[in-house]
Amino acid sequence: MTLVDVRTPDPKRFIPGATGDWEVIVGMEVHAQVLSNSKLFSGASTEFGKPQNSNVSLVDAAMPGMLPVINEECVRQAVRTGLGLKARINKRSLFDRKNYFYPDLPQGYQISQFKDPIVGEGKIVISLGPDRQGQFEDIEIGIERLHLEQDAGKSLHDQHATMSYVDLNRSGVALMEIVSKPDMRSSDEAKAYMTKLRSIVRYLGTCDGNMDEGSMRADVNVSVRRPGEGFGTRCEIKNVNSIRFIGQAIEYEARRQIGILEDGGAIEQETRLFDPNKGETRSMRSKEDAHDYRYFPDPDLLPLEFDDAFVTALAADLPELPDDKKERFVRELGLSIYDASVLVSEKAIADYFEAVAAGRDGKMAANWVINDLLGALNRTGKDIEQTPVSPAQLGVIIDLIKAGTISGKIAKDLFEIVLTEGGDPAEIVEARGMKQVTDTGAIEKAVDEIIAANPDQVEKVKAKPTLAAWFVGQVMKATGGKANPQAVQALVKAKLGIEE
Image (cartoon, rainbow, N blue to C red; front, side, top):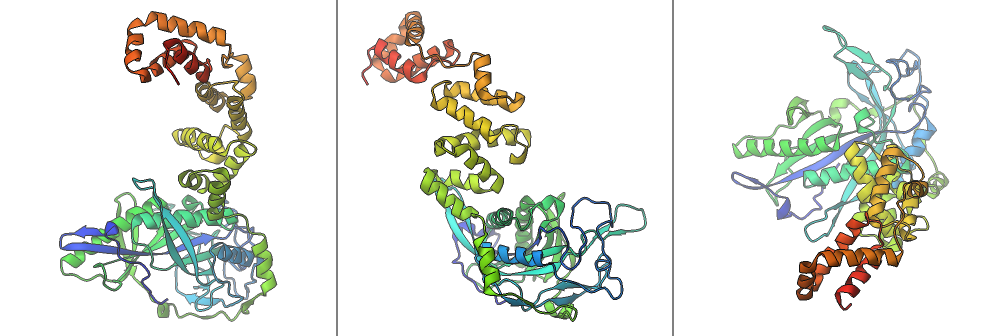
């Protein structure tokens, strides 16, 4: 990979040191487990959470004479991901053996792709913001390549006092290694990149993106330099399994390297681990280069070849991806860029919103989904898949507001009832007498009583008409929030002689 600097140094991203400003350079190698029923070269199950060593075939265990057979579904998933990254699809690629020893790698080598990957250069556009002016900054991050490879097993060090165990359930599961270019210049950019990449593969259905289960994890390459200088020596932080940890690891590692350089030292290229408990990185081993792995073409696998028709058929079946969906929400539904960005961040949220917004006011639906639903889920520690309020229920609440059956305040109370107790919103309104009062006679009586009881406030309104809002609030309070707000406002202004 030839390093090319495509970014202009930006002072707002500089890190101040004791001897001047520094710039951090970040590139990432993301390992995403392919969503498929069986492994890359065997028929063993990929189901997560099964008993240890129960998803293991003779191929995964590297028994003598066992030969790998490519899983076509994994090839399809890699190509679909490449298309989602707007990348070049290589119709001919090769599998290589990457040689190294590790207890959970039975073959003594990993089947991977080196010089000829299945997917070439692509790009991801990330958005940072909003800033204080409500503006977003779009930044293009280059993708160097995507290649297919086997995952290794898992070493278990906490099962016995003096021995380590090996679980091969994960051994041979298909991985897509997605390699970015060194185009990121802050921890915020790196977190936005990982968030966007995870969103894309989830939309595509090519990886579940569950970082806590290890099905998506990142090796983060970090270096620092004086602004305007060439790239510095990088250190690789292995297997970071949380977006928050990615940000913390970059912040710590950049400061560590700056400290060494400002003290007159030199950065050694090495592999490091991030300790989330201490919030720091620590040395793991010296960094290997490609020649250390002694790559050579795997003699048991023919070149992987397919034609344009194969790629075209997969491209035709791609879903609407986050950027396209966001643009449509802004264009067709009149949403702000911020609201559209929140709604497309996860496919499940976007699907929920579209179900609520179907045939309704898009902006109103967005406000309820973002502010009320997502706010409530955040308070209770649930995600959108666990929501107690279905799109149909929230849609009925919005319909009741639009019909004038309930006021906005009553709607908030109704939402909380549905959230905690469930039920049909329309039936709850009927059963609990929550209908909005639209009888002008009853509203007028309440207005007259409030005005009569507050002569001092009436005098203040004559001097400052905007204080009429106080009377509106008192009437709404007196009617339990059931009075029609527009009718109350009109009657208050009429009774107090305030001209429109």
